[in-house]
Amino acid sequence: MRKILLIAAFLPSAIFPLATFFIGLRNPSIFDAPSLLRISPIPAVLFILAFSAVLIFSKRSALLQKNSHGLVLFLLFTLGYFFMASVLNKPGINTNNIYFAADSGSWAQRMAGADGWKTGIRAVHPLTHLIFRPLTAILSILTSGDRFYANLILLAAAGGGCVFLMWKVVQWMTEDQNHAVLCASLLGLSASHMIFSSVIESYIFSTFFLLLFIWLLITNKPAYLLVAASVVTLGITITNVAQQVLTVLFVQRNAKRLIRTFALVLGFSVLLNLAAKSVYPLTEYFFIPQNLMGEQRFSQGIDINRIELIAEDFFVYNIVAPQPYLSIRNDTPRFNFLHGTILEYSWFGWPAVLLWVATLTLVLINFFKRNYPVKHNGLLISMAACLLFNFILHAGYGFEPFLYTADWTYALILIIAIILQNAAKRTWFIVMWLFFVLSILLNNIWLLYFIARKAGEYLV
Image (cartoon, rainbow, N blue to C red; front, side, top):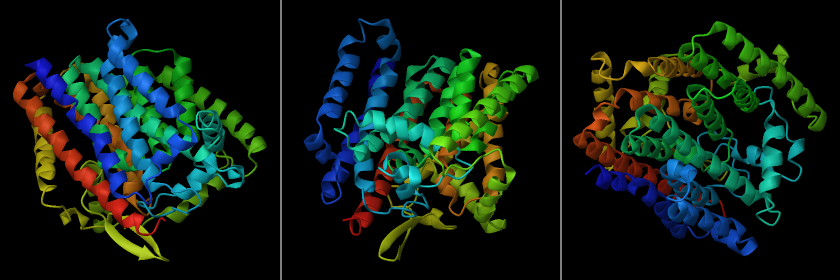
């Protein structure tokens, strides 16, 4: 029975790329994925070869066999994200502020634009030119020099990589393949990851390195790898290093190692920031406090409506999203989640909402009953601390809180994975978990379809 359930657990991830391909076909005027085949068939050939290798040779290679389930998830989600990215991102069109206040046009220019080095980098993202431009340039070898498609592949692969790492972490903790596959699929199908693995921005890359850091830490990998992952995390968005500090603090509880690790992180980050400034002159120094003070322009007043909106983004919109608010400014669409948007679900979205509420209720019951392995308490506490850190930070920062949801959605799902791992040993729970993930898929695919249809009226 468990083997049949394991096969069924892959159903949501298998449907996802088919659904995004359908969205593309329904919006042919803005579906750019087929154009890549005309420019260069190499990425498609490599994808087919990789998928075939995982399916055919997994039993002949210990490494492939050990990671085969996670690699299948990675490939399926990367493909789905790429299809969607080719719909929502347009070369030559400024897409800033269209998708939940994301600066997607500016980030596309920074990462892939021929003169992207002329686009300024705020101190809060100090190493992004140094990280993304070389990666995009390398990937463009596969796309006959087209950096736009190389950028989309990089974005989609980061999203798929987050799913793979979630699978690795949950599988390591629980040794339960059904639970690991469904938790990883839940992350990949969450509204936050569907959007920010498809819209060019920096947040999904931060999530990848946050999850990579957790994997390196819990599996006792060498310290230099932890330092490297943290330097890249700081280089993308400096505030996310606080989450890694909290993770080390509660998982290892070793103050000396904590201080030593992040002193090295700070030192290497300063050196790389100096190097980035010399290569990309419009980069700001993050270690000069005055440069960071400019972030105050994104400050928000804190009142009951703001707190309610933050709570909705933390525990509802990031997983199962309602239909967003749509406005038109200067002949350009704007999608946002406003206070009160929580009531805007389609009739087939409400089962996903109810099952999500049931899941959170089950999490609370099992937590207070302590019905979960205490050996993962350190990781559980650190993830809760990361949620609290982000809640406090974004209560007063950011015009559109949903923009930052990738920074904490992984932590919420890890909390759920830890607390419900005993429940996952029961067949009834896996069946419910599968139906829940399928309902999330249905609801959030509608979200993508709605956005694509409305954006397609203008992005041509």
